[in-house]
Amino acid sequence: MIRRIALALAVAAPFAVATAAPPSAPAATPSPDLDAVSAHLRAVTTMTASFAQTDRNGRTLSGTLTLKRPGRIRFQYQAGVPLLIVGDGRALTMIDYSVRQVSRWPIRNSPLGILLDPSRDMSRIAQVVPSGDPNLLVLRAHDPGHPEYGTISIAFTRAASAPAGLMLRGWTTIDAQNNRTTIVLGNQRFNAPVSDETFRWNDPRPKGGRG
Image (cartoon, rainbow, N blue to C red; front, side):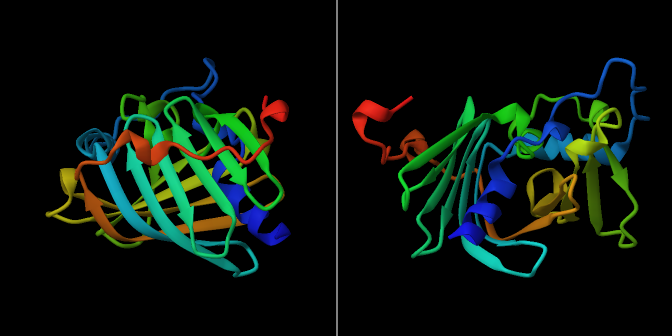
C-alpha cells in the first residue's frame, strides 16, 4: 500500500513547477513548437486514455485517465488499487479508500496544472528541449528560482490526425530527491462527450470528520 500511495502522490502532490516563473526571470524565446503545444491544448476539450504509471524502481500501476478542460481530470486505477485522483476544476483530490483518507491540493500547484489550463502562457514556464527525434516534441518546465521544486517533462508525437497535429504521449516528473515517475498514455480518444459526473467521487470519511 505504501508503494501505491507513493506512486499516486507523484501524480497529485504539490509541484510548484506548474506555477509561473518569478517576475525577474526572463521570458523564453518564442517557439513555433510551444505555439503548437498551446494550440493542441486549446483544441482538446476532452480526452480519455489508458495509462501506465511507473516509479523509479520500475514498479507500475495502470488505469484509465479522463480529462475535461479546463481543470478536470480523473485517474481511475486498476482493479484492486483503492486509490482515486480527481481534479474538479479547482483542486486535485486524492482519495485512499483503504484508510478513508482524503488529501487536496490546488490544481495550479500540481504537475498537471500545465496540461489542464489551455489559457496559460507557456513561454513563461516551459521550453522545448532536443529529443533526437524529429517526430517527438518534448516540453520541459521548471522554476529556475526554486530548483527544489523539481522538473516535469511532457512528450508529444507529431501526428497529422491528432488535434493541432500533436498526440500527448505522457510525462515524467523528477522531484528534489531525484525520484522519477513516468506516465505513459495509450488508446487516446479526443473530444468525445464527457459528463461532469465523471469527476465526482464518494467521500469515504465519516460525516463528522470531513474537513
